[in-house]
Length: 322
Image (cartoon, rainbow, N blue to C red):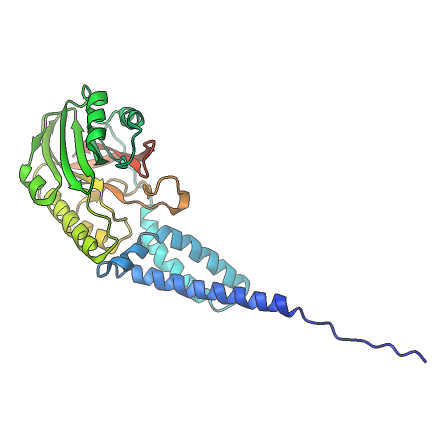
């Protein structure tokens, strides 16, 4: 009599180990994302924590994917992912609401960080010229960039001034209107503070470009410089503008506290996030170039544009007197 032997199916232990490793990795990432999101809220106290805060949009996107993943597997870790979604959505969603004000602009202001190593001077001039701004602010200008700006756009912007900000970088202003320079601000805080007259009304303008806060000392210096710039613009008794590359995003608690303290209005608010750095990195970009106004202006238009050879998008704001 022939005997048949039946054997139980052998488990694929390698596949099982790989799955466990994958689940452990995703679980670790879920907890880490929540931790990063929470630590970002303490960015006022430590420079490294603030670095996390700038990526609220990216954290929101990843946390949504993790939420869907754990819900698919009916795993309780979906609760952890949900907390990350809620925290980051709370930061991001206010910038997605649409509250556009329509009207004819009295003044167009452009700010652009052109990158100090950028030697494509013709493209810089062309990029600025096509926006037809009344006032142009240039960060990370070098003497060569300034010379080419004067050569190419001197007729359109006959009133110019340049101030040293850091390392090899200068801030430049070009204006269609005469400028009155506050030299005290230039000397005390390495920032532009000027007055001009637009349609018969005096206008104040402040621009600053602090160090990138990659260590505690630069973090402190950046906070001090932008705080002085915010205070100076907020104290103006005339319609005023504050613009520049502040090396801080709209999601930073330092940014939030300065806006709350001074009451200055972000030109991009109600129009979108408009990330500006690092240009070309798509969804990894963050909004660190800003333009604010006091109660003397309202924003009727805001957008970003490319300057060839720069790692920043330029920002352009159309402003109307109130």
